[in-house]
Every structure is written in structure tokens, then in C-alpha cells.
Image 1 (tube, rainbow, N blue to C red):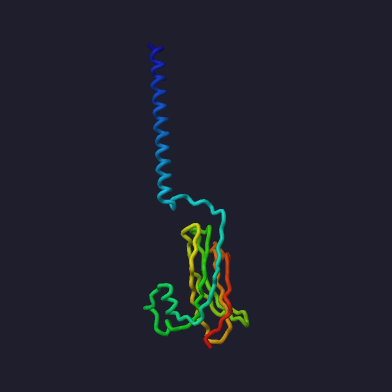
Image 2: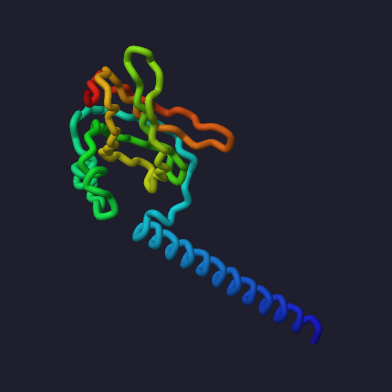
Length: 185
């Protein structure tokens, strides 16, 4: 009786092992199919690979001298109700430029402007940096800054900088200098 019972036990164990293996393989296949479908329908769910290429550039920098602060706010679709008539009427230089960023998704980058006196090379004013965080692998956008013009003749020039915010410093990724322009005097 023990001779015949042993093959039945092996046969039953073998069938159970095959069944467990089949269930496991089917489960893995099903999970893989669901994950693949989810990545197809929602590509942003895919894990990010380290970018093979990073680049950041500023280009097409132009200056529109004499633009009022109110006109600037209207162009960037921002409300003007919290500003006085005098603030809205103030004249400045509108800087238009294009920003192209690849490989910095989720990183904190800074955009800022500086204004320099052309004769002395000394900095006259600067903006507080605007922090931007790209949401895609590649981001391209047109951007505008408004610089209040000094009440003297000049000439002046503006500088736009794109920086990567590191732990203890800012790494300059690109910068562009405007053509010379006059002040308000």
C-alpha cells in the first residue's frame, strides 16, 4: 500500500506545483499588461530616466523701450487693480525672449534680469529671480520682463540670465545681453 500511495502523493504534489506555477505566471502576465496599458494611456506615469542630454538656452531677445508697466501687465494677462495710476503709467523697457529647456524636468531654474549703465558698466538695478520648474522633458516658451527705465539719459543695456539652483550656488545655464537703449531723460 505504501508503494502505490507514494506515486499518488508525488503526482498530486506535481499537479499542485504546476497549478501554482501557472497561476503565478498568469498573474505576472496580467500585472505586466495592466502596467503597460497604464503607461500607454498615461505616459507621465512612466518612471523618469536620467536625461541623456541637458540644454537650456535664451534667444530672440528684443527690447521695446517706452512700454508702460500697465501695458506690460496687460500683455502677460495680469490684473492691474492693485497698482496706482502712477505705477501703471511708469515707462520702462519690455524684454521679449524665448526660453528652451531640455532635460531639467522637476529641477528648480531661475530667470532674472539686470540693468547696467553702458558707460560705467555698473549695475543699476536687478529683478528678484523667478523660479520656474519645468514639467516636461522639453519646455519652450516665450517670456517677457519689464525693466523700469532710469530717469537719466544712458545708454543702458539689460541682461537676462537662466540659472540652475544648486544647493549652495546658482549655475549659469545661459545669458543674453540686449542692444543699448536710452533712459527717460
